[in-house]
Image 1 (cartoon, rainbow, N blue to C red):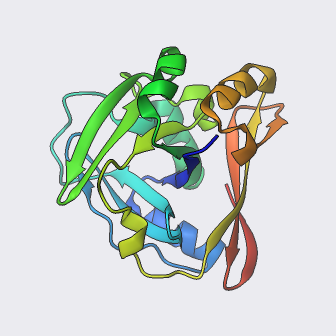
Image 2: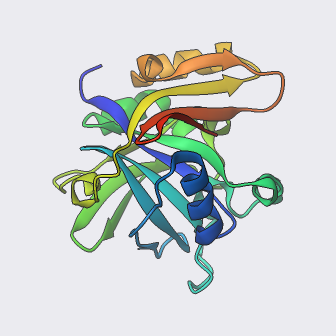
Length: 214
């Protein structure tokens, strides 16, 4: 589907230092920069994966006030914290589209709500579930549209990394595939059956060769 691409990957961690160290150990590059998400009480660091793709390490911002709504990416849930106590994890991905309203209408029962956001000169719109849960356990992407903003990856340092492939695991992939197809995302991710819960794996070309990030 024209206008639909992988925008970024989301790695969650208990704190940014843990997440940064995990990405460095896995990929050999260290996330940098980033900013805060005041509405969600989180902050991030970033790694460029191309001219319009990046990896985001995200964690609860200890200096931010408690948000008035559940944080995104299940960061308020005990189940997510149990996972993050073991290690930081690749938990979901963003699908960039210039057809946000059309794709949302077909899948609003899964994606939640369309929400505007801004930081500095960046203005974007994305889909969020009201209680913060991850659609399809994170295998189903959330949508993002950067509107008239320049894509943030263009301002990031070249890491020498690029996304080579994305794989999603789910106990019932037959329930996930029709949604991915409706979003135009099916060609962007390889779907596999999992005997355990949903999860993701990204294959990233790095200066040290091809690495797998989970």
